[in-house]
Image (tube, rainbow, N blue to C red; front, side, top):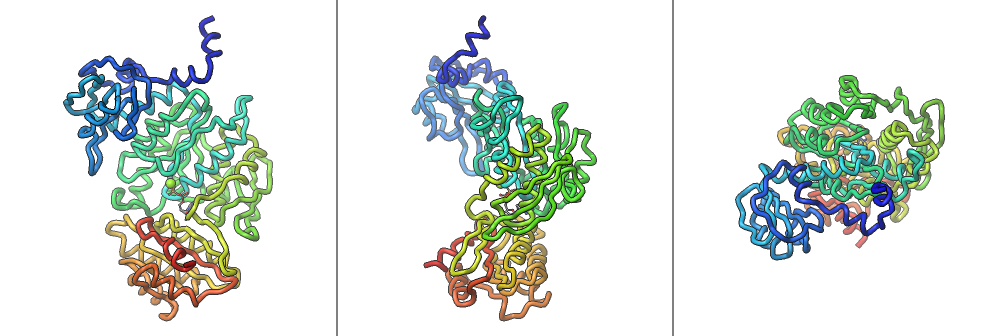
Length: 478
Ligand SMILES: Nc1ncnc2c1ncn2[C@@H]1O[C@H](COP(=O)(O)OP(=O)(O)O)[C@@H](O)[C@H]1O
Ligand SMILES: [Mg+2]
């Protein structure tokens, strides 16, 4: 009888039931009560003191610049009912829970919520394609029926790049009983991070999209990146399934080493793409083949790498029990974000705005795409430096110069500290000096580019976030 009454609770009551009790906080974090306050915990767990409301639980995180412990007073004044800290604090009025490490405690709380509500969790990591795969997978799940239930409106997904030890728990803490599935992105910049994020998310399904040179500052080498990402395929809960990209040699190897149940994708995988072509007006088209079934899919994303991302999302969805028809609907609805291979037209030219970020693998993918899209017109690349490459930076930029030449880019416009090195390598690989321009700033590049392109040309704009290469387009259109 009790159970029945529970099932009939109204929505607000259900939301309220998500409030934390002190016992739950202690059980989740292994912390101890340093001081017991009277205020009732009715609110969310927050890490920004400015977002504290009456009844909130404030976790004092220590960041690179700021230490949340210095904002405990502010949090209490704003009405925090509970403070979670790893230093002695005097927070008059609020309950104080002392833990060894607040960052760890935040993860533990996210994990607790995940285990308590027990949605199906699908986790995504990889050097490139995480966010795209996540968006595609979430779009598929929105179209799906699982266990007899429509998932529309019941899919939680990582927003933006909330993919680290703060972002992932915050995402999981947004779970409510309404959510049946959660699609989460896991990112890493130092060894051990993925293992911890995997522990927090405890996924039922996991995918490593690719292993490539990114974040080399923290992870050192490609083998280091593989070891780090590989943590997502290890120590998963029993019965968990991994999707393995057979077209990526590192991922293939990691998949082979994993004892989990598997679904493969790629040219020789169980989930494959045939007859891949560019759609007129932007996007890709391909035939998805899986389990003896096939269907034609029209993506709103350009580039072959996005077909690979779509295959990864499809493979994971299939493993979870989603039908091919829902996979097709979801993939066709998914839309790229601004500045991620965003296609537009301007003065008859096709502009590929991929200025959101860059690393060697994504540069290569984007240059290959612009070469395909140009289809007879000029291939133009406006490129800014790639950051976070550590000691390999010079060499990677020289390789970039070679790739620019090899993908037969007609004109390159370069910006950044490494631009001269890119140029030199491009010239050595056969480009003519007059076709490789190093600009002083965005406006300089725009001014030069303005008279040098026309209808039918394809222009790629890309660089690391800090290079803000989209400003070249803004200047150009001014
Ligand atoms: N599978 C892939 N292989 C290589 N490059 C890719 C792949 N998927 C995406 N990219 C490139 O990486 C950029 C970022 O994609 P995104 O999905 O946001 O990746 P992430 O979340 O891993 O940073 C894209 O704009 C594209 O240039
Ligand atoms: Mg991302």
